Image (tube, rainbow, N blue to C red; front, side):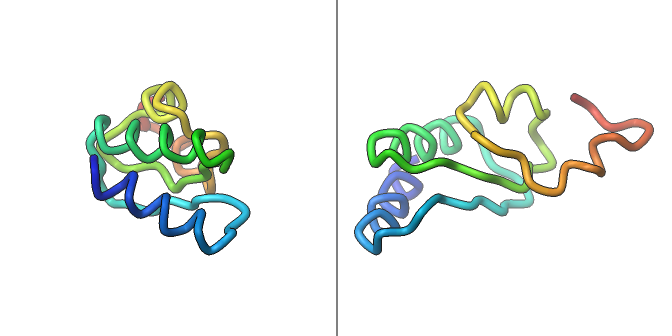
Length: 79
């Protein structure tokens, strides 16, 4: 989790407009750390959802926008 928050701080120092996440898997504590740090910097978080988390878990953890979510509409996908 600390690395995620530190990465957000580095991005904020570069004056980015938002944080975009693309991870194959990501643990909830790390995601919450990233989104919390982004909130403190007033940055939105957009993401390709990690395969190990549901859409609901990701949004409840603080993701503002889901990118390319069409694959979650396929049969067998979990929301």
